[in-house]
Image 1 (tube, rainbow, N blue to C red):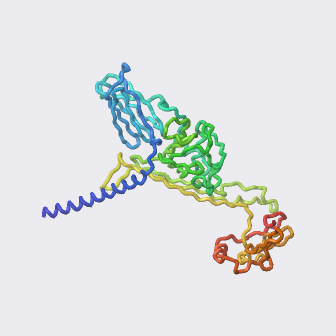
Image 2: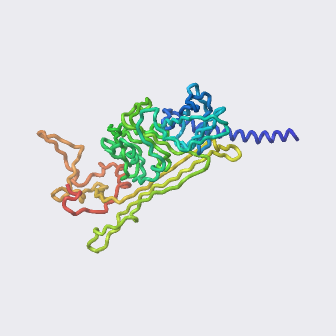
Image 3: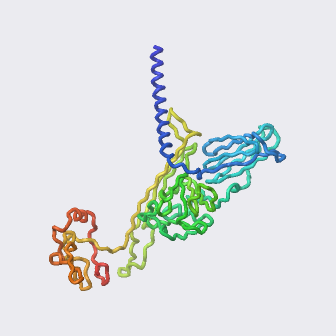
Length: 440
């Protein structure tokens, strides 16, 4: 009886361990699949500084703890022989630094905001006292970039999310940083659907590819979460970041670091949001519609009735969701493992007043007797056989096809004919104004 009971428990334990192992393999596969490109960790930041006593002498082996306010993750280190501590490769966010040492009061600096690619220096001066006494520095000086000669500015989540953007392209925010000029010259002067310079976007949207500190606007480098996101041909970004998923971005210039030696202009570091200890998400839609447009009172004098606006539809919609990874009865990732996912799509349609020539049913069958394209004499242009060319006295001539208006059936490719019949537009308008596109 006891043996059977043990076997039953082993079966339950084995299934649980198999589930855990399967989950670990799944997570490992995701991490491995995202590891081929290992760039310098330019989307992270770091904290460093010195710890002094009241007399200004450096303190050795003081304990320093760094805590992420949103996730609760904590990093620990100690000061070395010069009283210096450091926390490298820290993602942007809000943190708290705590310093303790035997015989001294505990010093705390809360709500320290670390920006992307920032090296933040925070020095501490400890006072003699009991370790149970805590001194909280609530009004610390601004964290200046004193470790490098970089120039640049960070555009935070609030600015990214609240400023109006035509087409929701974050590139329009690049000009908020100093030294950026939206000259938009050269081959990538515009971007959008079908341009071939970077990822497609909504037609008519505002795309800015600025000149940084007077350099060419094709001398910028784009990063997305540490991965190069620069289109190889147009020097614009390849994958458009979702605006509502951006935590912040920084446009850096005057670079003196080796990892940015590939360009003369600016480096755009975009950092997306990450999961926290609480589940959070959002749904959004940005709408433009002709129903919200005013009528034009000058478009219909005959009936004294303003014509309605031309049809126009533009919808951008999406969602994001993040939080701790949790599998009931198997794994609780609160304070350890997090996820964040975002998705966005768009739909666009607009009436275009464009006149162009499309073949009629007779023309698709090779009969151009009543062709819409006519010469200045008012008659359709004659058709000549391109496969029969003769040269006489230095001149080239070709015979007419039949009576000059009908292509023989044997010379028509049936596959191309079927394709045109299936996909070409049907004519719905015949211009009659002199000089219209149907006249050559």
